[in-house]
Length: 252
Image 1 (cartoon, rainbow, N blue to C red):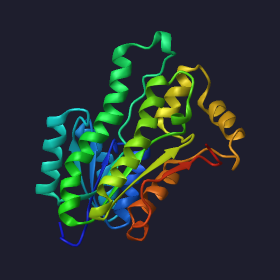
Image 2: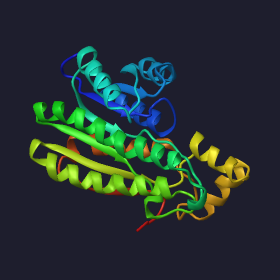
Image 3: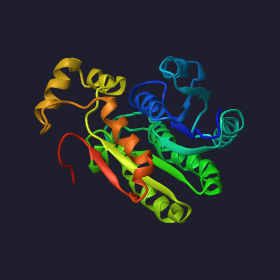
């Protein structure tokens, strides 16, 4: 890959929000490492990027596993280019009310979201510090403000905000910015699964959500990708440690 092309890693980018961010960053001129648990599942995103004239590589990795993360980032740096942009998007849901939530459900969610973001950021920051330039974007959620049945997910997404602000303080001197996006209701396979879990047809679920959103529509993965594109841009170099709620209205 050309030395002029910056390499971006997007975790959990086989589908949904991650795939949209990967496609958008590729269209912005980044070479994109599409990282997901199943390497074969990355093919769709990689093919979409290359078909549009972009550069991409698919990498299988478990972001919650230290050795898996180290080998994945090393492979990306060696085969594709030293990564200076990281989007920590990988996430899972294990929803349940507190009294029914298992320790495994708690650990799995905190592991992918928080441990995964920590491990990925720790590996990538080496390349950013060496380049004296970098961008980290962490995916939080409006659930960070609290959401019934999501004690694990809400805790993880709130944790992402504190993690973001701390990394912004630590890495700023190296010209590395760190910001977070907190999506509201976005139409993805994950929200479709939530509708199924609560026993509501997805179309009704979406209509109900839209009626509560000031802009009167639900979000699309591209809405999040657009914000990620801004954070990763050269022009956003004085924006760091911020959490932007992309939710169609104010959240606090």
